[in-house]
Length: 83
Image (cartoon, rainbow, N blue to C red; front, side, top):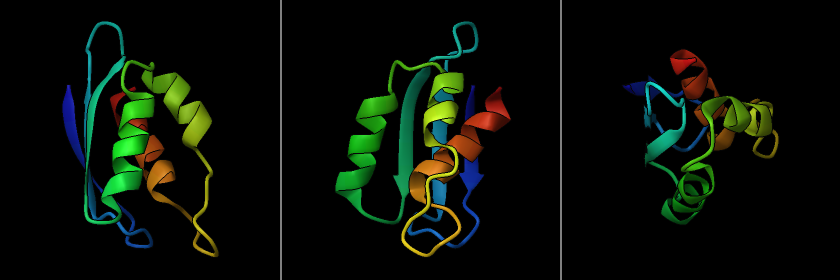
């Protein structure tokens, strides 16, 4: 399953595309649009192969400075849509 998640506007990335295997629920790929490419490539490398539920558990609630959310938190929100 592939989805596109529009972020909430308080983070640098404006959109996250997530692909999750339908049967195993493992994260196959993540593409962030906007924001810091190095951090996003790092996040993608870390969650690729991880189950969506484990990624949600690890990334939910992470804030970026004084912002209410972050790119990892928004990835968790996107993954919740496929669970």
